[in-house]
Image (tube, rainbow, N blue to C red):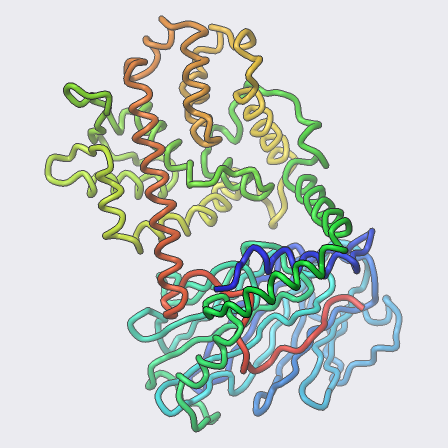
Length: 545
């Protein structure tokens, strides 16, 4: 099987040589595809861009076959652009402002609109594509490249949603695969399909969706005399799921060939990191952030985890679950008892948490269900339960990012997709607190006057993956205050932390197992960087020019 990490490094090295020192940015691309009964699709694309070059934006739509595009419209801030029909590229920035059109090509077209000015824009683009759904001998399918490689600048994040009023996309009646990008292709649970990137796009990245659907929902005039198995065999060639030693070797050779670009690649990754830090924290280097004793985001764990994920500082292993468990113990939703003649502890269930995030309540429910009839969660009991409920655990993990983003929006930290100054300040507090709790020289800095914050300190230490270390140091500051404050004795604390971290690890392992198993069979899961051949649409290029 191909090595996903090696492919990512290869792509990064290849693109590095063309990096612009004053790079424009595509911060977000959100594509919504609604399939109609006649096999056509209404497509809405939202482009959040920051552009400092060129006079227009264009999308390449080639390899269309019997697909036709119509009804192009572009809007920005509620203003609808004038549709000109055939597009004239030979004009200046101001002449193209608030205008859009189509450049006809031999095997497709280019959808174009004027930038109007350089800087930040959010364009909403709508158009209709006929015959996207293909009627095969044994099923219906969609096999389309919705995002082309070669877009300049490359998007930082892409999300594609496919839905239809004609059917709900569920594993019982459909299958799904994603190709060309690092991320996931999944059933959303609400009847739609979600394809989403987890890493910045590179110049070679694309987004190809392959969807199999039982016959009956669509009546497409685009008929192909072949089976879906033939389509899938072609798409799987060169994919991450194809077991090929020769491809593994080829991957290593490609990496070796790209090593000469290592310096440029490191520069590019550093540039992207500085840009992300400025967007989320308002600084270009974490070194600029001093210690902080304060609690960030009003104590909201989902907001904090989202910010850590964005800047690449989240602890691996879903440690947010351990932090949630400690928070529930502090709030009285869970209580701790020690197993007789053992250092291990058990968790008992009190009142279900009603305030705060849905993720906390769902975690409580899963733990309670795993505890069995006695409603006492014993060591490794959740791990055994999670293996029998992989999809439920996966759904909990996959919902964290969206809930974190929504928490930021609800708290006024994220407005129109941008972090407010208050959000950036709280993000710096988050990093400052992590530094404060991590620094081995700070025992004397932590005073008894901060005892009211110790519970929160331990919760956030769990989020950072350093709970054991912080617990010992807090105990050393004032043992009596620690014992009076915490809802368990200090000698039980190591058992509490072990139980919380073990549960987090069980969630991580279960989710990885679920995604891996689902991916190759089309049940949703990881996307494949390679493969996907035989698609319609796509092309190469696009972006600012």
